[in-house]
Length: 314
Image (cartoon, rainbow, N blue to C red; front, side, top):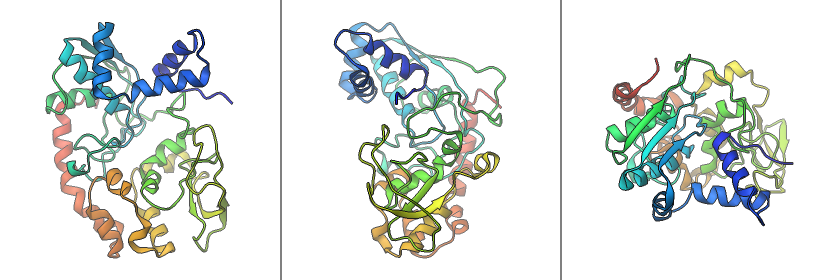
């Protein structure tokens, strides 16, 4: 089955697929290699013949959804070469939430590059403006083409899946919470037809739902491949409820206590995703979600104030 990617990414894949000797899979590999190329290769690409960089990518509004990182790296390259950057802005489907720990930069990684919360409530254009304004990215000739008739509270359902493992609007809404399982021993449904809408583990108990991860186009070797996992199915959650949920730790906390593995429940990826060290520590100490949230509340308030300088939409 052919996968359809969002706007600019699909056009890039199509452009490579039209070249002699390059098939669909090869075109995908080349496109995604370029999107994740080292900084020196990004710079060489800009120097080779780019006059203006146009950014047209559908983000989903999370610190660990990495399209914005690609944009910032290319902006740095454009600043060094004296090229202009035009961001064709798009709605943020999770733009009504600002929540979660602000990244402790000692956990900076390929899935988190800026000191912003898990849910930052910014569009790509606003991230670009904030990154330049706060010195997180090099100052460049930046223009943002604004969305019309959009506010951060405007419900927005994506017309095209932004990536193969976020195939539904519900998955986009549940992603902030369920993606945290990437930093644990629990499967979040990669290798099923419901990625980010289910989670489970072979040793979880008291569960009526089960699934078995298998290789798929979006997950060739999914975690716990071929093993029967017992867990939770969130795929029937009403869409409005999923949209309102934002970031919750309840799924991770419940799974951690169900398995009883202690610190072995987590992997080092957890801190890269959640952005701080205290969340794991507090979960293992038996803290409630409400108690953990108190730790990041002041950081979110400070971020909201800072964020206000760069907003393009109410």
